[in-house]
Length: 287
Image (tube, rainbow, N blue to C red; front, side):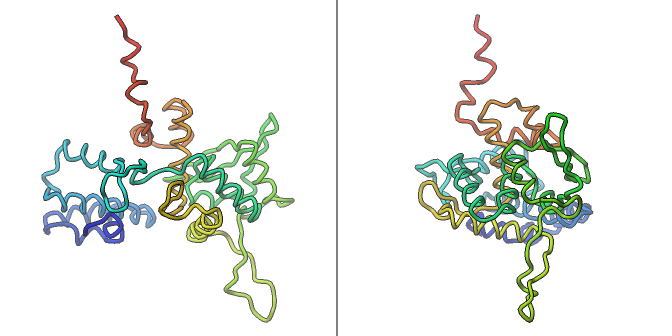
């Protein structure tokens, strides 16, 4: 395995160097009760084991220095071939403000549903599972006239998220006059028969991912040139949401709450600002 892409497509067990390592890997993954969570951790463990294998480090001999190097590797600036890049695109880069604007514009041209989905992903940082499970009856008008949505978050935690003006407008357009039911539906083209309109079915996570690719391609965002991204997917927009808030000077605690991260350590991973050194609190202590 020479590249990150080939590692991600692997499962972690074959990357474990011996049975002594495979046993705890299996135990850890089997302890994840939710299939979606287990699948996510499989990818994470596969990437980590692949990285260790290429450096000749045994998983059971990993120390703090290895963990720090791995975290640096995950955020270092590289090209597709793994060599340092001249235009500064991180390995898992968020979308830029300009790219977000183009994606939202493409979504607006596409449909109300597309715009509402993209806005919830990028201006609220919703997980794709939360978008797919959104219900009309969980929309609530706030006392000041705004709109909020209750979501069933990671680990079954309920949370009410505020919608900004643009997102609220798009969501209201999708909800229409309905007072209950799944918020986002699509026409099932596969079931069209005898010239009749196909039934409408809820959006799945795969359908949302396909929609983002379609919108990004239409907006001219997919590619390898400057201003383009190699792919567009829901978590990239959640990453973008957190990064944009940090870049705009929002405090770590506020961003953690907005992203609904259980730990502030997770939020800190997104804080890649180039001026982090200059804004370090130590510079306030001048004697």
